Length: 118
Ligand SMILES: [Zn+2]
Image 1: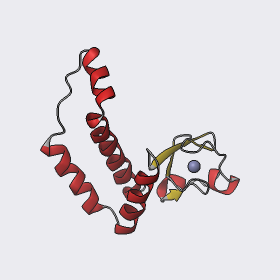
Image 2: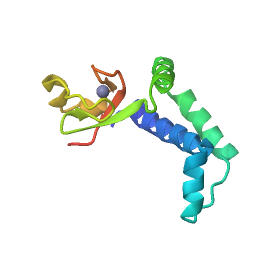
Image 3: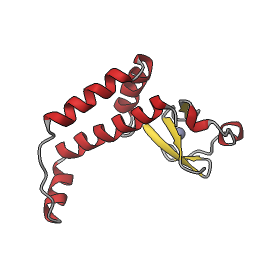
């Protein structure tokens, strides 16, 4: 997988984790099923900062804009469908064997894509 794409997926996951930890509904649900919901640690914040430093500036900029517009900035593609906007990918993109080796954007919603159907 493209190194920047891997970093981007990690950053996205960390951001969703931080978002969840600030969400009252999620934390009360987790408490109900017996999980202790801690405050995001300084370690996570530091890891996030490091990811941001390793990512290209233009990718980070686009990521920030997408996170403002949508809940998720990165979406998986399965069976040629973007799971951000549920539109079918153009055939040229869907059949590209190297699609996970580069940064792909959904032509419809503009989210970063990673492909889980190999
Ligand atoms: Zn899309």
